[in-house]
Length: 267
Image (cartoon, rainbow, N blue to C red; front, side, top):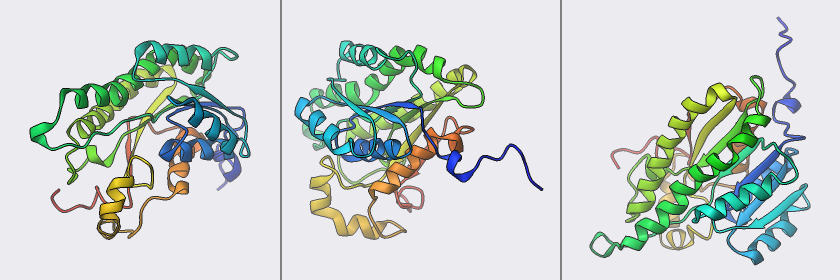
């Protein structure tokens, strides 16, 4: 029986007319997500600490749609506020916020420094919270009961299972971000804003380069799907969560890891 509430396949994933901010959008997972959102029709703002990286990524992404790049050091509260002000300068609405900017620090337990906690926690956990604070009015204005605004936090499978490498502050920050996602989902749902997290497995990126150099084959073999993540895998989950297809999902942590964390035996 036909249902007049069904949306066409094309419309289900269409982001035309939507505006998105992707932090850390100049490389790796952030670049994959920015491309996916652009190809689905959204206007996208990307940010990075590096002016050169912003210019290069903007040029690379411009063939997929309308993109703007804003350099910002999101480990600082004032820079989060400045970025929020610039993003909403020409529009009071923001449909999609992707908190992707992050840092990793590997060092053995005996020598793990205080700096490794402050650097990683500031960027991985505090900055997403600060950006939600600063951009919540714009997200509220964009969201409706039928089509909420979206916050997508980029967590990690390191927060779901215990990785072999000594990433104490990274794993802890991502686990905290997962819980922050649930807390915000409960609070912001009635305000027509969904909050979900993506927990990526291993995707080729600058952050993962040294790990892949040492362990590519072992990581690939540990995944039930026997491969690393691809650009389209990350673009696809972002478009799903940002589009009509994902409008009834909030407070979820979605592993995109080829099954590594969710089927692991032990740790």
